Image 1 (cartoon, rainbow over the protein chains, first blue to last red):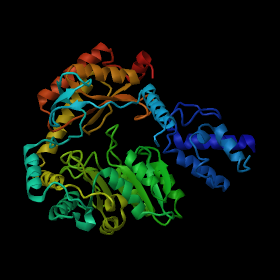
Image 2 (cartoon, rainbow over the protein chains, first blue to last red):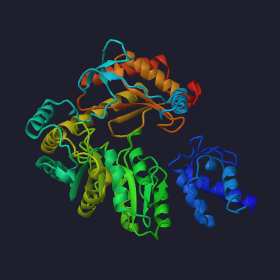
Image 3 (cartoon, rainbow over the protein chains, first blue to last red):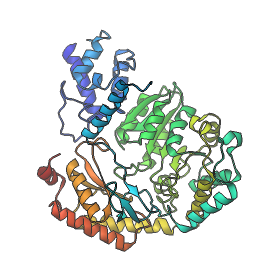
Image 4 (cartoon, chains in turn orange, purple):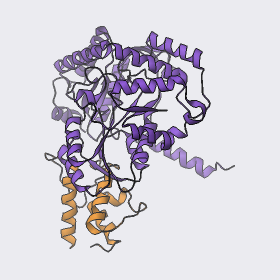
Length: 84
Length: 415
């Protein structure tokens, strides 16, 4: 599911955070939070999306800005919940 | 000593980090009352300099208006300085109830409760009306005090792209199973001066059975024909369930805020809102002066009309001069410069020309959207506006940005 999972999250990030006419390209290594594409307040959408999609509960101590900074970081976070 | 060397070292490093990041906030000392003309000591230790103030929230020019100051004196004389109590023990005077009634009448709502600030109103209201089975659906650019208030509340948090009604509708669909939903927005967004689409928001709220909360701090007193706020401007009087707003901007500019809206919600705030229950009552001197402000703006729209004329004049002349300004009708006028250093340099040069404005850059605004934010006031006379426009034009010529579009400015100065 690796590639599919990656694409699924990238697709969500684009829909959720970019405007339709945005020129930014998002890949698995694009910094999202540290670059300002996603601010710390808007990050909650990512957490909710992952929790609902994979039926998991990400505790606050794991829901750090760093854990959501790139799609790769999110994939690593999901591994902890056996989502791969 | 509990304040260890380790702790001292840690906090010192934090402060150094803030300075290195360029986000250290330095206070400028004003040695005069708040007004269009002020005396400022900056840098610290310099002789006071007379400048024109274009960065205050003194929209109606009432901060030092003689009638308001006189009402404050009367309040001090007749009701004393402090109440030494929260509201529900022995901190409620007749003038507190009068002011709440005047605010309710002015905002055209059902009831109003005063808070020590709008920050406190926003910190308290969400936790009172929503719980874990409910959803808060907020615009992404709401004020920090709303973000903090929502974080103190157990309801599920959702947010939508700034002023994007399709995205808001998606979130409303996504949260259909929740008991109550509340759409949360600023009436006017403080960095761009743009106005929430309250008519569309209210329509969506009706369609999906959601409540609406608006923080109208940058609108109460002057937006709309009678100055009631964004809800009047957008023709949705009576359709907003909760308005939070401040006495600290157009309404005299001292401090204090309120929650105004549905009767039951306001009453529940009196019973349960923690910043209300555990903070001292708003001081009588502020209540008396704010009450006078409500009398003035309920009687005549002269001040909001003058503010509107000043705003239109400034926006037209600055556009004609070749500045890239965010279009709109609000007295917040963002002069777009995109590059953070350019914004800082121009603000400094303008100060030297006697125009006090502030440059804003990331993280206060998104990266690559640095600007100087100008705030127009009814206290400004045409001569003040002309002086500011002339100074902006002189400095704009110096940096060769007049007539330049976004891409050209970015090409010259980078992001």
